[in-house]
Length: 479
Image (cartoon, rainbow, N blue to C red; front, side, top):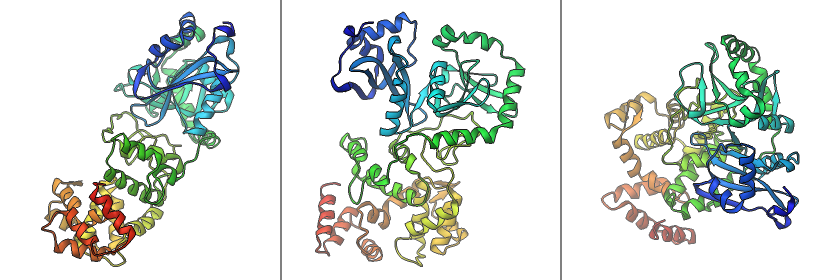
Protein backbone atom coordinates (compact mmCIF):
# COMPACT_ATOMS: atom_id res chain seq x y z
CA UNK A 1 0.00 0.00 0.00
CA UNK A 2 1.37 3.44 -0.90
CA UNK A 3 1.70 6.10 1.76
CA UNK A 4 -0.86 8.31 -0.02
CA UNK A 5 -3.66 5.98 1.05
CA UNK A 6 -2.79 6.17 4.74
CA UNK A 7 -4.28 8.41 7.39
CA UNK A 8 -1.89 11.22 8.36
CA UNK A 9 -1.10 12.38 11.89
CA UNK A 10 0.84 15.57 12.55
CA UNK A 11 3.71 15.31 15.04
CA UNK A 12 3.03 11.54 15.26
CA UNK A 13 0.11 12.29 17.62
CA UNK A 14 -2.11 9.26 17.52
CA UNK A 15 -5.85 8.97 18.04
CA UNK A 16 -7.10 6.89 20.96
CA UNK A 17 -10.57 5.50 21.69
CA UNK A 18 -11.22 4.80 25.37
CA UNK A 19 -14.41 3.55 26.99
CA UNK A 20 -15.35 2.14 30.36
CA UNK A 21 -17.72 -0.16 28.48
CA UNK A 22 -16.38 -2.40 25.73
CA UNK A 23 -16.90 -1.44 22.10
CA UNK A 24 -16.68 -3.36 18.83
CA UNK A 25 -13.23 -3.30 17.18
CA UNK A 26 -14.56 -3.94 13.67
CA UNK A 27 -17.01 -1.05 13.99
CA UNK A 28 -14.09 1.33 14.55
CA UNK A 29 -12.07 -0.21 11.70
CA UNK A 30 -15.03 -0.06 9.31
CA UNK A 31 -15.74 3.56 10.14
CA UNK A 32 -12.26 5.08 10.15
CA UNK A 33 -9.65 2.52 9.06
CA UNK A 34 -11.05 0.63 6.11
CA UNK A 35 -7.63 0.06 4.57
CA UNK A 36 -6.40 -1.69 7.71
CA UNK A 37 -9.44 -3.95 7.78
CA UNK A 38 -9.00 -4.76 4.08
CA UNK A 39 -5.38 -5.84 4.66
CA UNK A 40 -6.40 -7.92 7.69
CA UNK A 41 -8.95 -9.80 5.60
CA UNK A 42 -6.47 -10.15 2.73
CA UNK A 43 -3.97 -11.84 5.08
CA UNK A 44 -6.66 -14.13 6.46
CA UNK A 45 -6.13 -12.84 9.99
CA UNK A 46 -8.93 -13.31 12.51
CA UNK A 47 -9.05 -10.75 15.31
CA UNK A 48 -8.63 -12.44 18.68
CA UNK A 49 -10.49 -9.71 20.54
CA UNK A 50 -13.78 -8.67 18.96
CA UNK A 51 -14.31 -5.99 21.61
CA UNK A 52 -12.00 -3.76 23.64
CA UNK A 53 -11.91 -0.93 26.15
CA UNK A 54 -9.00 0.89 24.53
CA UNK A 55 -8.13 1.33 20.82
CA UNK A 56 -4.83 3.00 19.89
CA UNK A 57 -3.40 3.91 16.51
CA UNK A 58 0.14 2.83 15.67
CA UNK A 59 2.04 5.66 13.96
CA UNK A 60 5.15 5.52 11.79
CA UNK A 61 6.59 8.68 10.24
CA UNK A 62 3.26 10.50 10.55
CA UNK A 63 1.17 7.70 9.04
CA UNK A 64 -1.37 5.39 10.71
CA UNK A 65 0.10 2.01 9.81
CA UNK A 66 -1.64 -0.21 12.35
CA UNK A 67 -3.52 -0.38 15.61
CA UNK A 68 -3.63 -2.19 18.94
CA UNK A 69 -6.45 -2.80 21.41
CA UNK A 70 -6.59 -3.51 25.11
CA UNK A 71 -9.17 -5.11 27.31
CA UNK A 72 -9.36 -5.85 30.99
CA UNK A 73 -9.03 -9.48 31.95
CA UNK A 74 -12.25 -10.72 33.56
CA UNK A 75 -10.29 -12.52 36.26
CA UNK A 76 -6.92 -10.76 36.50
CA UNK A 77 -7.05 -7.01 37.05
CA UNK A 78 -4.57 -5.97 34.41
CA UNK A 79 -4.56 -4.24 31.04
CA UNK A 80 -4.57 -7.01 28.45
CA UNK A 81 -3.36 -6.50 24.89
CA UNK A 82 -5.85 -8.46 22.79
CA UNK A 83 -5.05 -7.27 19.25
CA UNK A 84 -2.09 -5.73 17.47
CA UNK A 85 -1.73 -5.31 13.71
CA UNK A 86 0.82 -3.54 11.53
CA UNK A 87 0.62 -3.29 7.74
CA UNK A 88 3.10 -5.78 6.15
CA UNK A 89 5.33 -3.14 4.54
CA UNK A 90 5.82 -1.36 7.88
CA UNK A 91 6.76 -4.38 9.97
CA UNK A 92 10.28 -4.51 11.34
CA UNK A 93 10.19 -0.95 12.71
CA UNK A 94 9.84 -2.06 16.36
CA UNK A 95 6.32 -0.63 16.67
CA UNK A 96 5.31 -3.52 18.92
CA UNK A 97 8.29 -2.86 21.19
CA UNK A 98 7.57 0.88 21.30
CA UNK A 99 3.95 0.21 22.26
CA UNK A 100 4.85 -2.20 25.07
CA UNK A 101 7.60 0.07 26.38
CA UNK A 102 5.35 3.12 26.39
CA UNK A 103 2.53 1.24 28.14
CA UNK A 104 4.87 0.05 30.89
CA UNK A 105 6.44 3.48 31.34
CA UNK A 106 3.11 5.30 31.52
CA UNK A 107 0.94 2.75 33.28
CA UNK A 108 1.99 -0.75 34.25
CA UNK A 109 3.00 -4.10 32.85
CA UNK A 110 0.33 -5.40 30.44
CA UNK A 111 -0.62 -8.98 29.82
CA UNK A 112 -1.15 -10.42 26.33
CA UNK A 113 -4.27 -12.30 25.28
CA UNK A 114 -3.57 -15.47 23.27
CA UNK A 115 -0.23 -14.47 21.75
CA UNK A 116 0.66 -15.89 18.35
CA UNK A 117 4.02 -17.53 17.88
CA UNK A 118 5.17 -14.40 16.02
CA UNK A 119 4.33 -12.23 19.05
CA UNK A 120 6.22 -14.59 21.36
CA UNK A 121 9.26 -14.59 19.08
CA UNK A 122 9.21 -10.78 19.09
CA UNK A 123 9.05 -10.77 22.90
CA UNK A 124 12.19 -12.93 22.88
CA UNK A 125 13.85 -10.55 20.41
CA UNK A 126 13.05 -7.54 22.60
CA UNK A 127 14.23 -9.19 25.82
CA UNK A 128 10.76 -9.47 27.39
CA UNK A 129 10.90 -13.27 27.07
CA UNK A 130 13.61 -15.94 26.76
CA UNK A 131 13.97 -19.37 25.21
CA UNK A 132 14.75 -21.74 28.08
CA UNK A 133 14.87 -24.87 25.92
CA UNK A 134 14.63 -25.77 22.27
CA UNK A 135 10.86 -25.19 22.25
CA UNK A 136 9.88 -23.62 25.61
CA UNK A 137 9.78 -19.84 26.13
CA UNK A 138 9.50 -18.14 29.53
CA UNK A 139 7.98 -14.65 29.45
CA UNK A 140 8.07 -11.73 31.86
CA UNK A 141 4.62 -10.72 30.55
CA UNK A 142 1.66 -12.91 31.39
CA UNK A 143 -0.24 -14.70 28.66
CA UNK A 144 -4.03 -14.78 29.17
CA UNK A 145 -6.21 -17.40 27.49
CA UNK A 146 -10.03 -17.26 27.68
CA UNK A 147 -11.52 -20.34 29.29
CA UNK A 148 -13.29 -21.55 26.15
CA UNK A 149 -9.95 -21.55 24.29
CA UNK A 150 -8.14 -23.78 26.80
CA UNK A 151 -7.49 -27.48 26.23
CA UNK A 152 -6.02 -30.00 28.66
CA UNK A 153 -5.01 -33.62 28.99
CA UNK A 154 -6.96 -33.64 32.25
CA UNK A 155 -10.18 -32.20 33.65
CA UNK A 156 -10.45 -28.43 33.22
CA UNK A 157 -13.38 -26.20 34.11
CA UNK A 158 -13.16 -23.75 31.19
CA UNK A 159 -11.50 -21.18 33.41
CA UNK A 160 -9.43 -18.25 32.18
CA UNK A 161 -5.78 -19.28 32.06
CA UNK A 162 -2.79 -17.15 33.05
CA UNK A 163 0.74 -18.35 32.38
CA UNK A 164 4.31 -17.22 31.67
CA UNK A 165 5.21 -20.17 29.41
CA UNK A 166 4.83 -20.94 25.71
CA UNK A 167 5.57 -23.99 23.58
CA UNK A 168 6.88 -22.98 20.13
CA UNK A 169 6.29 -26.43 18.62
CA UNK A 170 2.59 -26.39 19.52
CA UNK A 171 2.31 -22.60 19.18
CA UNK A 172 0.48 -22.63 22.49
CA UNK A 173 0.56 -20.94 25.88
CA UNK A 174 1.04 -23.71 28.45
CA UNK A 175 0.56 -24.08 32.19
CA UNK A 176 0.93 -27.13 34.43
CA UNK A 177 -2.14 -27.73 36.55
CA UNK A 178 -0.56 -30.75 38.24
CA UNK A 179 3.15 -31.34 37.64
CA UNK A 180 3.31 -34.67 39.46
CA UNK A 181 0.52 -36.17 37.35
CA UNK A 182 1.55 -34.43 34.10
CA UNK A 183 -1.73 -32.50 33.79
CA UNK A 184 -1.15 -29.61 31.40
CA UNK A 185 -3.45 -26.82 30.19
CA UNK A 186 -2.69 -25.21 26.82
CA UNK A 187 -4.31 -22.77 24.40
CA UNK A 188 -6.28 -23.84 21.33
CA UNK A 189 -4.62 -23.29 17.91
CA UNK A 190 -4.93 -19.83 16.38
CA UNK A 191 -5.74 -19.27 12.73
CA UNK A 192 -2.53 -17.25 12.21
CA UNK A 193 -0.35 -20.04 13.60
CA UNK A 194 -2.15 -22.68 11.55
CA UNK A 195 -1.46 -20.72 8.36
CA UNK A 196 2.07 -19.47 9.02
CA UNK A 197 3.58 -22.10 11.35
CA UNK A 198 1.64 -25.27 10.58
CA UNK A 199 1.09 -25.66 14.31
CA UNK A 200 -1.42 -28.47 13.83
CA UNK A 201 1.44 -30.74 12.81
CA UNK A 202 3.16 -30.04 16.11
CA UNK A 203 -0.03 -30.77 18.01
CA UNK A 204 -0.57 -34.03 16.15
CA UNK A 205 2.74 -35.22 17.57
CA UNK A 206 1.52 -34.80 21.17
CA UNK A 207 1.72 -38.06 23.08
CA UNK A 208 1.99 -39.18 26.68
CA UNK A 209 5.77 -39.02 26.28
CA UNK A 210 5.47 -35.33 25.42
CA UNK A 211 3.71 -34.57 28.69
CA UNK A 212 6.23 -36.65 30.64
CA UNK A 213 9.23 -35.00 28.98
CA UNK A 214 7.96 -31.48 29.48
CA UNK A 215 7.00 -32.34 33.08
CA UNK A 216 10.53 -33.56 33.75
CA UNK A 217 11.99 -30.41 32.24
CA UNK A 218 9.88 -28.17 34.47
CA UNK A 219 10.62 -30.21 37.60
CA UNK A 220 14.38 -30.30 36.98
CA UNK A 221 14.59 -26.59 36.16
CA UNK A 222 11.91 -25.10 38.41
CA UNK A 223 14.24 -22.81 40.37
CA UNK A 224 16.12 -21.64 37.29
CA UNK A 225 12.88 -20.94 35.42
CA UNK A 226 11.50 -18.82 38.25
CA UNK A 227 14.80 -16.97 38.55
CA UNK A 228 14.82 -16.25 34.81
CA UNK A 229 11.31 -14.77 34.94
CA UNK A 230 12.05 -12.77 38.09
CA UNK A 231 15.19 -11.33 36.50
CA UNK A 232 13.33 -10.34 33.34
CA UNK A 233 10.55 -8.74 35.39
CA UNK A 234 13.07 -6.69 37.36
CA UNK A 235 14.51 -5.35 34.10
CA UNK A 236 11.15 -4.22 32.70
CA UNK A 237 10.75 -0.44 32.32
CA UNK A 238 7.67 -0.44 34.56
CA UNK A 239 6.46 2.83 36.08
CA UNK A 240 6.86 2.86 39.85
CA UNK A 241 3.95 4.53 41.62
CA UNK A 242 4.04 6.15 45.04
CA UNK A 243 1.34 5.74 47.64
CA UNK A 244 0.47 9.44 47.34
CA UNK A 245 0.02 9.15 43.56
CA UNK A 246 -2.45 6.31 43.98
CA UNK A 247 -4.50 7.38 47.02
CA UNK A 248 -3.63 11.07 47.44
CA UNK A 249 -1.68 13.03 50.03
CA UNK A 250 -2.99 14.43 53.30
CA UNK A 251 -6.76 14.95 53.16
CA UNK A 252 -6.75 14.99 49.35
CA UNK A 253 -7.78 12.17 47.05
CA UNK A 254 -5.69 11.12 44.07
CA UNK A 255 -6.94 11.66 40.53
CA UNK A 256 -7.78 7.93 40.38
CA UNK A 257 -10.05 8.05 43.42
CA UNK A 258 -11.50 11.47 42.57
CA UNK A 259 -12.59 10.24 39.15
CA UNK A 260 -14.38 7.26 40.72
CA UNK A 261 -16.20 9.57 43.13
CA UNK A 262 -17.12 12.00 40.33
CA UNK A 263 -18.47 9.14 38.20
CA UNK A 264 -20.54 7.89 41.17
CA UNK A 265 -18.70 4.56 41.29
CA UNK A 266 -18.05 5.02 44.99
CA UNK A 267 -19.25 7.24 47.82
CA UNK A 268 -17.00 9.78 49.50
CA UNK A 269 -17.27 7.83 52.77
CA UNK A 270 -16.27 4.54 51.17
CA UNK A 271 -13.36 6.26 49.42
CA UNK A 272 -12.09 7.50 52.80
CA UNK A 273 -12.28 3.97 54.21
CA UNK A 274 -10.39 2.48 51.26
CA UNK A 275 -7.73 5.18 51.36
CA UNK A 276 -7.18 4.57 55.06
CA UNK A 277 -7.01 0.80 54.54
CA UNK A 278 -4.44 1.14 51.74
CA UNK A 279 -2.27 3.42 53.86
CA UNK A 280 -2.37 0.92 56.73
CA UNK A 281 -1.59 -2.03 54.47
CA UNK A 282 1.19 -0.20 52.64
CA UNK A 283 2.86 0.87 55.89
CA UNK A 284 2.56 -2.71 57.13
CA UNK A 285 4.36 -4.00 54.02
CA UNK A 286 1.32 -5.77 52.62
CA UNK A 287 1.32 -3.77 49.35
CA UNK A 288 4.23 -3.03 47.03
CA UNK A 289 4.58 0.07 44.87
CA UNK A 290 4.10 -2.09 41.77
CA UNK A 291 0.78 -3.44 43.08
CA UNK A 292 -0.77 -0.22 44.43
CA UNK A 293 -3.08 0.29 41.44
CA UNK A 294 -4.13 -3.36 41.43
CA UNK A 295 -4.95 -3.18 45.14
CA UNK A 296 -6.92 0.03 44.62
CA UNK A 297 -8.96 -1.55 41.79
CA UNK A 298 -9.56 -4.66 43.91
CA UNK A 299 -10.87 -2.72 46.91
CA UNK A 300 -13.14 -0.53 44.78
CA UNK A 301 -14.64 -3.51 42.94
CA UNK A 302 -17.81 -4.42 44.81
CA UNK A 303 -18.56 -7.36 42.48
CA UNK A 304 -15.24 -9.19 42.61
CA UNK A 305 -15.59 -12.95 42.66
CA UNK A 306 -13.27 -15.93 42.72
CA UNK A 307 -14.07 -18.40 39.97
CA UNK A 308 -10.75 -20.06 39.15
CA UNK A 309 -10.31 -23.30 41.07
CA UNK A 310 -8.09 -25.53 38.92
CA UNK A 311 -4.69 -24.17 39.96
CA UNK A 312 -2.68 -25.66 42.79
CA UNK A 313 -0.92 -22.44 43.87
CA UNK A 314 -3.30 -19.69 44.96
CA UNK A 315 -3.08 -16.38 46.79
CA UNK A 316 -3.63 -16.92 50.54
CA UNK A 317 -5.76 -13.76 50.66
CA UNK A 318 -8.08 -13.95 47.67
CA UNK A 319 -7.64 -17.49 46.34
CA UNK A 320 -6.63 -16.52 42.81
CA UNK A 321 -3.86 -18.42 40.95
CA UNK A 322 -0.27 -17.35 41.53
CA UNK A 323 3.11 -18.48 40.24
CA UNK A 324 5.97 -19.26 42.59
CA UNK A 325 8.00 -16.30 41.27
CA UNK A 326 5.21 -13.75 41.79
CA UNK A 327 6.07 -10.94 44.21
CA UNK A 328 2.43 -9.91 44.55
CA UNK A 329 -0.99 -11.25 43.66
CA UNK A 330 -2.09 -9.89 40.28
CA UNK A 331 -5.75 -10.00 41.36
CA UNK A 332 -5.84 -8.47 44.87
CA UNK A 333 -2.41 -6.77 44.89
CA UNK A 334 -1.20 -8.22 48.20
CA UNK A 335 2.56 -8.69 48.68
CA UNK A 336 3.24 -12.43 48.66
CA UNK A 337 6.73 -12.16 50.16
CA UNK A 338 6.19 -9.95 53.17
CA UNK A 339 7.72 -10.69 56.56
CA UNK A 340 4.83 -11.42 58.98
CA UNK A 341 6.87 -10.24 61.97
CA UNK A 342 7.35 -6.84 60.35
CA UNK A 343 3.66 -6.65 59.54
CA UNK A 344 2.66 -7.45 63.11
CA UNK A 345 4.96 -4.73 64.42
CA UNK A 346 3.56 -2.21 61.96
CA UNK A 347 -0.01 -3.19 62.66
CA UNK A 348 0.54 -2.61 66.37
CA UNK A 349 1.51 0.98 65.60
CA UNK A 350 -1.21 1.47 63.02
CA UNK A 351 -4.18 0.13 64.91
CA UNK A 352 -3.24 1.12 68.44
CA UNK A 353 -4.11 4.78 67.86
CA UNK A 354 -5.87 5.21 71.21
CA UNK A 355 -2.71 4.86 73.26
CA UNK A 356 -0.86 2.05 74.99
CA UNK A 357 -2.51 -0.30 77.43
CA UNK A 358 -6.04 -0.09 75.99
CA UNK A 359 -7.87 -3.16 77.22
CA UNK A 360 -11.56 -2.21 76.89
CA UNK A 361 -13.05 -5.36 75.44
CA UNK A 362 -15.49 -3.50 73.17
CA UNK A 363 -12.60 -1.51 71.75
CA UNK A 364 -10.54 -4.65 71.12
CA UNK A 365 -13.59 -6.37 69.66
CA UNK A 366 -13.97 -3.51 67.19
CA UNK A 367 -10.30 -3.67 66.24
CA UNK A 368 -10.42 -7.44 65.74
CA UNK A 369 -13.59 -7.38 63.64
CA UNK A 370 -12.21 -4.48 61.59
CA UNK A 371 -9.08 -6.49 60.78
CA UNK A 372 -11.18 -9.46 59.69
CA UNK A 373 -13.50 -7.24 57.60
CA UNK A 374 -10.47 -5.83 55.76
CA UNK A 375 -9.25 -9.27 54.72
CA UNK A 376 -6.53 -9.85 57.33
CA UNK A 377 -6.22 -13.57 58.02
CA UNK A 378 -7.61 -14.89 61.30
CA UNK A 379 -4.23 -15.98 62.66
CA UNK A 380 -2.67 -12.56 62.05
CA UNK A 381 -5.71 -10.74 63.49
CA UNK A 382 -5.52 -12.81 66.68
CA UNK A 383 -1.78 -12.24 67.16
CA UNK A 384 -2.15 -8.53 66.45
CA UNK A 385 -4.91 -8.07 69.02
CA UNK A 386 -3.16 -10.17 71.66
CA UNK A 387 0.09 -8.25 71.29
CA UNK A 388 -1.45 -4.79 70.94
CA UNK A 389 -4.18 -4.87 73.55
CA UNK A 390 -3.02 -7.36 76.17
CA UNK A 391 -6.11 -9.52 75.82
CA UNK A 392 -5.87 -13.29 75.36
CA UNK A 393 -7.69 -14.77 72.38
CA UNK A 394 -9.71 -17.16 74.56
CA UNK A 395 -11.21 -14.23 76.46
CA UNK A 396 -11.90 -12.23 73.31
CA UNK A 397 -13.36 -15.26 71.53
CA UNK A 398 -15.67 -15.99 74.47
CA UNK A 399 -16.95 -12.42 74.29
CA UNK A 400 -17.43 -12.64 70.50
CA UNK A 401 -19.38 -15.89 70.76
CA UNK A 402 -21.40 -14.72 73.75
CA UNK A 403 -22.57 -11.69 71.75
CA UNK A 404 -22.87 -13.60 68.44
CA UNK A 405 -20.44 -11.21 66.71
CA UNK A 406 -18.12 -13.83 65.20
CA UNK A 407 -19.16 -17.43 64.52
CA UNK A 408 -17.56 -20.15 62.37
CA UNK A 409 -14.68 -17.77 61.55
CA UNK A 410 -17.13 -15.31 59.98
CA UNK A 411 -18.44 -11.91 61.07
CA UNK A 412 -22.18 -12.20 61.69
CA UNK A 413 -24.81 -9.60 60.82
CA UNK A 414 -24.84 -8.69 64.50
CA UNK A 415 -21.07 -8.29 64.33
CA UNK A 416 -21.35 -5.90 61.39
CA UNK A 417 -24.01 -3.94 63.26
CA UNK A 418 -21.58 -3.66 66.17
CA UNK A 419 -18.81 -2.47 63.83
CA UNK A 420 -21.00 0.16 62.18
CA UNK A 421 -22.36 1.57 65.43
CA UNK A 422 -19.17 1.70 67.50
CA UNK A 423 -17.82 5.19 68.37
CA UNK A 424 -14.49 4.33 66.73
CA UNK A 425 -16.31 3.74 63.43
CA UNK A 426 -17.49 7.36 63.39
CA UNK A 427 -14.19 8.64 64.77
CA UNK A 428 -12.47 7.06 61.76
CA UNK A 429 -15.28 7.82 59.29
CA UNK A 430 -15.13 11.56 59.93
CA UNK A 431 -11.33 11.58 60.32
CA UNK A 432 -11.29 13.00 63.85
CA UNK A 433 -7.73 11.91 64.55
CA UNK A 434 -6.87 15.48 65.59
CA UNK A 435 -9.03 14.92 68.68
CA UNK A 436 -8.62 12.67 71.71
CA UNK A 437 -10.46 9.42 71.07
CA UNK A 438 -11.09 8.55 74.71
CA UNK A 439 -12.84 11.87 75.27
CA UNK A 440 -14.86 11.41 72.06
CA UNK A 441 -15.86 7.88 73.08
CA UNK A 442 -17.12 9.00 76.47
CA UNK A 443 -19.15 11.81 74.90
CA UNK A 444 -20.55 9.46 72.23
CA UNK A 445 -21.65 6.83 74.74
CA UNK A 446 -23.28 9.41 76.99
CA UNK A 447 -25.47 10.58 74.07
CA UNK A 448 -26.08 7.22 72.39
CA UNK A 449 -29.83 7.83 72.28
CA UNK A 450 -29.21 10.41 69.53
CA UNK A 451 -28.35 9.96 65.84
CA UNK A 452 -24.63 9.27 65.37
CA UNK A 453 -24.11 12.17 62.97
CA UNK A 454 -25.84 14.50 65.43
CA UNK A 455 -23.60 13.28 68.25
CA UNK A 456 -20.47 13.98 66.21
CA UNK A 457 -21.61 17.50 65.34
CA UNK A 458 -22.51 18.20 68.98
CA UNK A 459 -19.07 17.02 70.04
CA UNK A 460 -17.34 19.21 67.45
CA UNK A 461 -19.34 22.23 68.63
CA UNK A 462 -17.08 22.17 71.70
CA UNK A 463 -14.10 23.28 69.61
CA UNK A 464 -13.31 26.55 67.88
CA UNK A 465 -10.72 25.66 65.28
CA UNK A 466 -10.50 26.13 61.51
CA UNK A 467 -9.77 22.45 60.88
CA UNK A 468 -12.71 21.40 63.06
CA UNK A 469 -14.98 23.86 61.26
CA UNK A 470 -13.87 22.33 57.96
CA UNK A 471 -14.74 18.83 59.21
CA UNK A 472 -18.15 20.04 60.44
CA UNK A 473 -18.89 21.61 57.07
CA UNK A 474 -18.03 18.36 55.24
CA UNK A 475 -20.25 16.34 57.60
CA UNK A 476 -23.17 18.77 57.20
CA UNK A 477 -22.79 18.69 53.40
CA UNK A 478 -23.05 14.93 53.46
CA UNK A 479 -19.36 14.11 52.97
